[in-house]
Length: 95
Image (cartoon, rainbow, N blue to C red):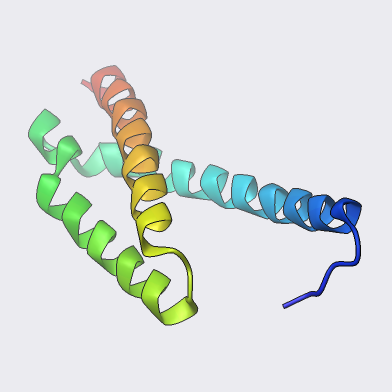
C-alpha cells in the first residue's frame, strides 16, 4: 500500500486506479457482447444463477483481498445489471 502525503497524491492514485478499472470494464463489456451470440433466449441473457455465482465469487475475492465485501457486492450487482441491459440490446440485434 502506498502511503500518501497529501490529498493530491491520494487523488492521483485514485485517478490512476479509475483509469485501470474503466479499461477493465471495457474489456469485460466486449466479452459480454460476445456472450449474446451464444444465448438462446432472454432468460439465458438474464441468467440469475450465473449472476449469483459471480456475486459469490467476487465476495470471496473481497474477503481474501481485504476489500469491503458490501461495496464489492453492490458495485458488481449494479455493473451486472447494466451489462445485462447492454447484452439484451445486443441479443435483440442478433435475432
